[in-house]
Length: 397
Image 1 (cartoon, rainbow, N blue to C red):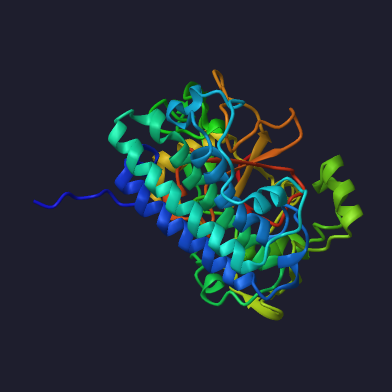
Image 2: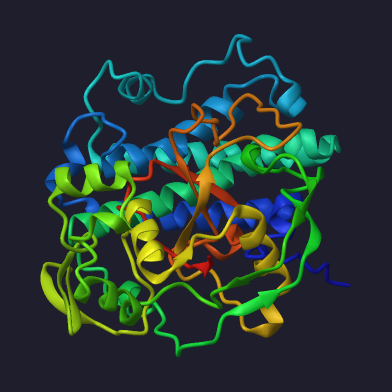
């Protein structure tokens, strides 16, 4: 009788994935990385040094993470209880290891592809051994983190492609334009904010804790261009009363008159995409906005950004009533902070920033792999960052 393997795109199953499911997902993620690498291969930025801003570095880091935290890490089977400073085995490629240490030039694309193939092969071999050991979550911890890391690198590569105006074809056409929906009202209630223990939980979701959420009204979907145009046509980018002090300073320093890549924001929206001007559907969500712009729109509209508990509760309780998320990452109110009981571990992907320095985005974008579309997921970014595929929704003030 055939054994059914859970869906490798299931965001709940992937956090508790066994070796069979992880193998499928890791192969899929590496193929995705290689497709991005092929797109960038003829671009000048590919050989532009060893900075973590370059597509070459991002693609290669998927292999480096697996080599460093799986192949070379003799205590990987202990999971987060490992000694991160314990001696490691020799790297898979000394020259590429030196490149990641900023001590050597970047490799040619062919060498990087070879490195990515070899590191994945080793990872899959060790994964099979980890499964036989039967050590549970600890033995699979770094394999699961490697998958999450590579999926996030894919998002970063998509951002670089959009910034470079590369021909992305169907990627842009898959961003949905949705008909308007009425906001949702949710009654006051208690909510478990964050994720409970079990499987592999990203650090910035640790740990679930009970919070009181007063009644609130929240948009059923992210703010679209039709609503944002009204703000611009009403002089929103010139009205000091709409902006925070930090937001106004950013606006003046950047000389912004519209969100990133937008060439026209009156009557209709024209953006620069794939090296040419394109008209954007008014029902598509606002894209590439900083949190400063999201907050300014909310002040102009007499509304506010949702809090994290409000957003998370609505994502869970509002789905049957038309709450839609996952088109764009969404800015929420407040600064990045740890949940009660938070603790990090070696090799974690979500280092906690200094208090007050970064904002929070919830949800996912249409670029995000389906297995990463978890309603508890959080991302941190400076309020000025607008290169991500980010937008926002609002709550009644």
